Amino acid sequence: MGKRIIQQARGHGSLTYQVRKRAYIYRIDYPKEEGKAKVLELFNSCAHSSPLAKILFNGKTYYIPAFSGMVEGQGIKIGGKEIENGNVLLLKDIPVGTNIFNIEIRPKSGGKLVRASGLTAIVTKKALGKVSIMMPSKKEISLDENCRASIGMSAGEGRKEKPIIKAGKKWYMMKARNKLWPRTSAVKMNAIDHPFGSGRGKRIKPKIAKRNAPAGARVGLIRPRRTGRKKR
Image (cartoon, rainbow, N blue to C red; front, side, top):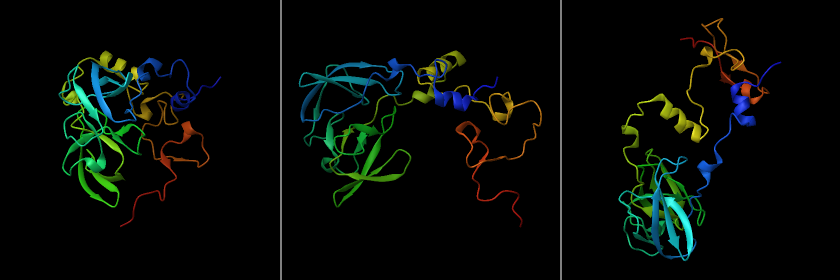
């Protein structure tokens, strides 16, 4: 009997291809009101590359990415206009040239952008209710001036500089997030695992997937504009 190929099995979901729910129990969000918060704990989450901070605000606990230099017991401010690392301000109250992270996409939506370890964005300009931000990728985006962001840089800079050393550690890191690892080329797979797989025909030619092909079979050239070698 035939089996689902890897892409289809991952999309369908099973005990084999299932993320650990415990990895994603921490929801990153900002308090809705303004005031002072206290950092209760700094800890590692296997679903996030940056350390997380558990903060206390008006008797409720929230989780946010820690900033570089944060310590337990420290106080941070939600709202206001004080420019200090860790404080959460509206984009319109942040001066041009300030480093920020954990940025909201829409007002009151909670931080969504620039949350990975060691990342920071820069406020570049303001105009007509919009604030332009230079992302870590050097791409400039424009957001509503009432969106919020944290001052400073996300903690965990230099994470990629330390080598993994052992394949087993990498395997557990990827398993915690249900990432496909190790990655290998299609022609090295078995025929049951990929349309390009099998030991025959290693010198494969580009294949054009049918437009109505199922998810696992949509491999190779997907709806190409043209094929073949270009004539000079």
